Length: 126
Image 1 (tube, rainbow, N blue to C red):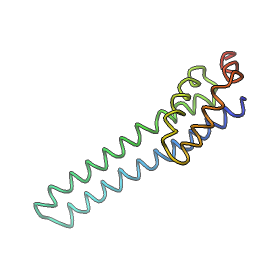
Image 2 (spheres, rainbow, N blue to C red):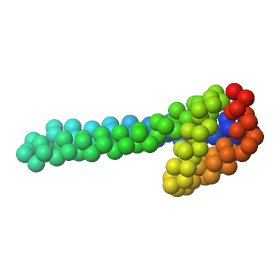
Image 3 (cartoon, rainbow, N blue to C red):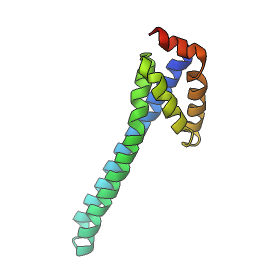
């Protein structure tokens, strides 16, 4: 079971890292577009649209980060077999079920492996 736990931790670290890279890409894309609009269109409409566009990008980026950082923290905890990470990742795996298709597969695998009695015993020894 220890190998399953490590694989789940690694997959969560990878998926969360990709989400964080995506959040940064959205942030810089929207920020760049807002700056580009502000520079190339010196009008009253552009002065209103540029901060709105930048703000929308920032809100989307923060929302993605809020969804990805708990999985990253829990994945690192699973890799080190931290006792708190089992329950944490059961909750994250349940939330992953709505992230079709990769999150659903990872959520099912996580719930299957982390709720086994052998896994509970593995974390109890730590």
